[in-house]
Image 1 (cartoon, rainbow, N blue to C red):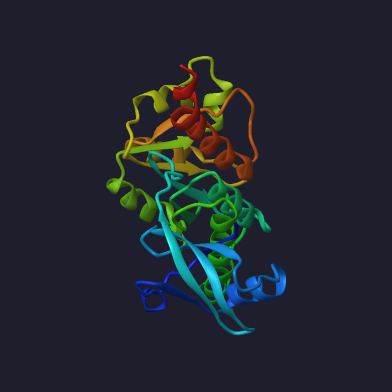
Image 2: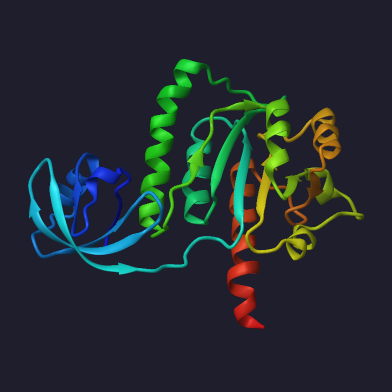
Length: 254
């Protein structure tokens, strides 16, 4: 069944849910659904119900709530990806795959070696595109929540934001080159369910020495993501997949 996020409280009643906007086009035109077809609807707080379509038109769908379901599909820890602004559409890939793999939130930041510049006007336009990407990725992967995307910040602002997290790490390419490295697995073993973790990833050129020093002084732990140097758009995928395996799969294999 296809999942849809219905985030406005007024669209819900005790017995039914009303769907409007772009989701109607998807249900009506793309899926070609008919009355009686079942869909999954998820509210703002993650509450999820199996619903049966009762009425459908080109601008509104009404579905009757058949059954509330409990699902445990979110990562056991809350992971924020702080991503140095990359070139082109790489950030969109990071958002899509990071959402599928369970990220809780994303914070784009301007690094010393970031080539692109997002001005305020450009950011407003991008934000709409970004929010659509994470919503669709959340629906596709049947998540209960849609990740948040914060406004772009400077590294200094990011360091201030990091105070709210239980654990802070940054993927440092120098760790991959060193024989005296700290592995990501070592950090994962210290984490407990329910913790808030922020992972800082550099842009294409990586971190400058000044940035690495600033992060370390703010209690970010430098780690390596394996012995190879990853592209910036690969690092978040590696990290989230590793977290999923450690917390969601490894325990079932022991």
